[in-house]
Length: 517
Ligand code: ADP
Ligand code: ZN
Image (cartoon, rainbow, N blue to C red; front, side, top):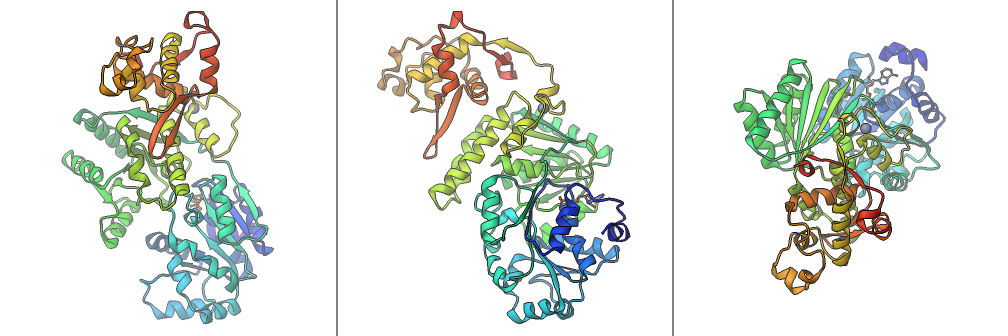
């Protein structure tokens, strides 16, 4: 095994988990491989065919990606090809079924369309594994559900004795369960690597969509280009993509664009040009992404709160694949948080909607976090961390300004408690600020003792405070249908019950820019 690794790939040793996965595949076992982006998952299905001298069939979602992989493998002397509906070369087909390739990539659509006789011929020639890359696409709980993936289960019966290898960088337990069930993995060998991307720095900034901000963005990107590093800017809408693209162009920065409203060809051309460093900046929606194996992405910027924490982890994870320190920056505005129904538009069942809401809320919490971002991310994927302070996120490196907010926190939580948890943040904040709006008067909230006690602070100040209390579990947000409500959680109740605000242990909170004004 080591000599194949050296001979074909030029690597002197396996990375963690790779060898045991290869061994399990060679022994005929199904495998589920959940490992971070850049950890070397591809090698796990690229080595077995070289040893077993049989074809590895690999399902992968993107043609451009397969083309790149095939090109690289061929340069290494490995016989690789891909099959897709766009592949018109009949010879490839014939050579494939007679076992002429070590690695045969195909799209999921193609895999489902191939005839029984194709598979039986290829089986006769010898198949050493059937790999499903980006396997989370099979799950509705994943962040990138694809219907074609769901149909791959048909092949389980056709290839009943062939080891199935599902690979993904998405870790949640629900998605893992879905993958095992959908692909009918039999007692699989499960590998779950660490999700800690030690070379990535995480940072979050709340921003306004002004020209000052855009100027800062331009200088941030220019600095990156000067070091020959690439940047991806992820936007939540096509409109934002176009706007940022135009702005960069006007500022003299050459960039590419990628979104769902472009033709397949335009997208693939753009993808390829980016991979080949013809330009250093890609402005894109999340349509751009799966399997971008570009080592020198130094910077991933999110322009707007992402739709889920899973997708944030994946998208930000596209930088620094070569292990060199790289930078993930997320810009958000509060108005991003009102997009829940936009994201829910695709949900077909109540469960799906709940899943979408929950992961969107996790992304919001990540934005508002005042503690270590890495720990929060890893914790979300069920990974325990040993240190409180990672040293490579904004919250761990900023010299924190903390101040005693006990009184204010008490007021806000008591007010929320009196509003009985049926409301979002606006109502209790209005009450504190002494509003006489119809809603306040109708509910007789103006009679509450807190009415008007917080009018010295702007509404956004109180909301910023609320978000900090949410991120520290004093307050809890839940959804009633698509409306967010906020209530006092157990930790907040303990705080409220412990005494009156003047006689209790101080509640220190970090001063965010909003709270510092
Ligand atoms: P993943 O699919 O998990 O995101 P890749 O398979 O694309 O990751 O691998 C990421 C990078 O690590 C690639 O550039 C690959 O060549 C390199 N790599 C993989 N395995 C090894 C190894 N054993 N030794 C050195 N480099 C490796
Ligand atoms: Zn940290």
